[in-house]
Image 1 (cartoon, rainbow, N blue to C red):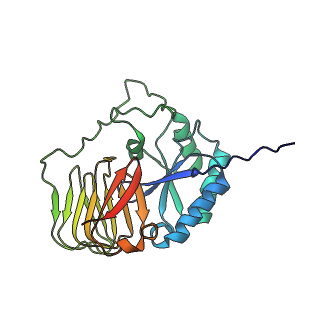
Image 2 (cartoon, rainbow, N blue to C red; image 1 turned 90 degrees about the horizontal axis):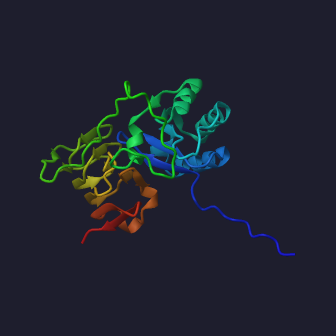
Length: 258
């Protein structure tokens, strides 16, 4: 009698993306609490300076339905035990709003833009949020991509540890270095003419065409449209080299510049 071959699931249980202000948004793809906790514990172990006690927003938008409060509370506790701090739920349906009240966590709306199409609708594979009455519904207009020819933000001074520079709806050019513990964010692309030792997040509002360029790569973290890599994920032969970072079919690519 032949035995059935077990199916191995190579997909991650949670898809982690970095939001506009460096807060991690954990989109739950399967409610396997132990597996989610193990994945987060591994992320913290690999990059403790970035993820240990990091604020995390829990996003149930990748599930077919909102979990009950007992499962959600178990997940919150498991993530805390794994080394991060769940601080809010991401925007979703009315059930999600009620769940946030039960858990005593705030509900944040801005992360929904990372998963919507340009027309504001959700992908067909995911449940659309319940509509609010027309009289009270006030959806924000989608932010346009940086316009061609629009002046970018130029940062001439070094960006030091603890500082953050954000280029709203435009590119960012840093003429000096980005120190360890510093963060540069742009809705467009980022150009750094000195060493990059901190974090660089391009395409912060979901622009997948954005890129990052730097002269000397030592980054703690780089991200384009929420897709990120930490220094431990990057080949050592690229450390200290001029590189560019971009997205190709939702995969973050990093290569040396000639």
